[in-house]
Amino acid sequence: MALNSSAFFVPCHNYNQICDLLLSSARTRSIVKGLQLHGYIVKSGLSLIPLVANNLINFYSKSQLPFDSRRAFEDSPQKSATTWSSIISCFAQNELPWMSLEFLRKMMAGSLRPDDHVLPSATKSCGILSRCDIGRSVHCLSMKTGYDADVFVGSSLVDMYAKCGEIVYARKMFDEMPLRNVVTWSGMMYGYAQMGENEEALWLFKEALFENLAVNDYSFSTVISVCANSTLLELGRQIQGLCIKSSFDSSSFVGSSLVSLYSKCGVLEGAYQVFDEVPVKNLGIWNAMLKACAQHSHTQKVIELFKRMKLSGMKPNFITFLNVLNACSHAGLVDEGKYYFDQMKESRIEPTDKHYASLVDMLGRAGKLEEALEVITNMPIDPTESVWGALLTSCTIHKNTELAAFAADKVFELGPVSSGMHISLSNAYAADGRFEDAAKARKLLRDRGEKKETGLSWVEERNKVHTFAAGERRHERSKEIYEKLAELGEEMEKAGYVADTSYVLREVDGDEKNQTIRYHSERLAIAFGLIAFPADRPIRVMKNLRVCGDCHNAIKFMSICTGRVIIVRDNNRFHRFEDGKCSCNDYW
Image (cartoon, rainbow, N blue to C red):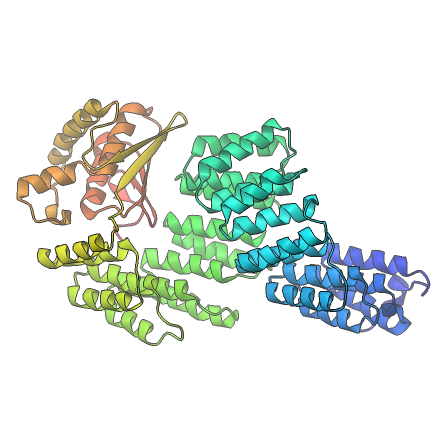
């Protein structure tokens, strides 16, 4: 490529200026300028200087061109410890962990010792691979070389153990470190969040604030994600206030977590506002917004955002397409879903089992069960539990128990399966009136020592979470809740509501079925919201299982009789009930 000499001519002896220009090109992602500089370096013989080679490797690494970094590394005749460090870091930063570890091995074979720059890259690679066994070897190496007490090496080890799920080792490393920085604290918080130990993560964040730690956007992002997963909207808003005070509200990392927070708590307008206010959007925040819209049944908005994202120059990844496919599945847009599935291959993204599961779910919910089975049969990868599970759920919806049993048999052939799969099969039999077969499926679950997940619903009120299970009366306001349900039930019946007891999947008489379905957990949570929340406040209910068909219909009547907006999040999506209508258009 031709060099613009007027812009880049530098005397050969002044290689420091060349290094500064490479750093500038790396920061601004100016690939064309960087390539011109590389051409000049080769022609002038400056590639013989290790510092120039190191900056070339760094430039290609920051430009996400790791194999060009490797070429620059191999072209360098004198490889210093920093040159090795640069290439090992390059592979770790560009999601090539095996190559990072392989070059560490080559470095050590050449009698060079890894330092406090190399070891963090090696541990990062072990974390990406979830290879705690290799990570322990790197830990031993850091102890032998005396770098285990270094704050950067120690922080990377905490992060590695956390990402490998070894939270006890991570905490031990964290507690033993003589010095800790914000990366150490953030890694430990992320570890607790990843393991679902949300309370520990929140306590650690509180402790960091008490120690006057200058938390960064990664710390805020992690703790906001904890609030999102726990649907702690008010606490999340308070932490957002801290972000604004600390000027981290414009960060894409914080923004993507805030989008997830508002979305998972049923406040989609808040997610839109955060998304619009983030000035520079990374792929994470685009994906978070696409997922939010998909879960809230804003399918056309998903498609619009996907087009905007591509026009902005952002390349979609496998998560992007999964969000779009899920949106099409929720809306029954089969043709559009097939189109985006095919687009994945055009974008050189190989569909995973999750993408196939979404495609099968899309076809199955639309009643195209045979076509869904054909997709599974022709998959280039082995179908997983999630793929067969998508077909099983669709068979249950369309009451095809024969195909449901076939799908379940295929799942059992895979080996031990989740308790949810046994329950899905049991429900399919029960829905068809085959109660003996349903009982057998549940017995198989008990024989394995597993239990069905208890259906729970919860609401947040004044920073306190109120949780309900079907038919329970342990809540301090149970008497008021049941009185409200009885009062509301009479109004609903006058408005035309008739309970559909076919959703009670047990062999009991009609009166008992009627009583059973009347006190499902989401109805108790809604009744609590009616007596506890101001009249102008939407009632937001979170649920860990799929909402049953009768409750879905009942909540539509509740919204008519009370004039309230009721938002219910089940294990798959959001349902916004208003004036007797649901945002899912009864397709879920």
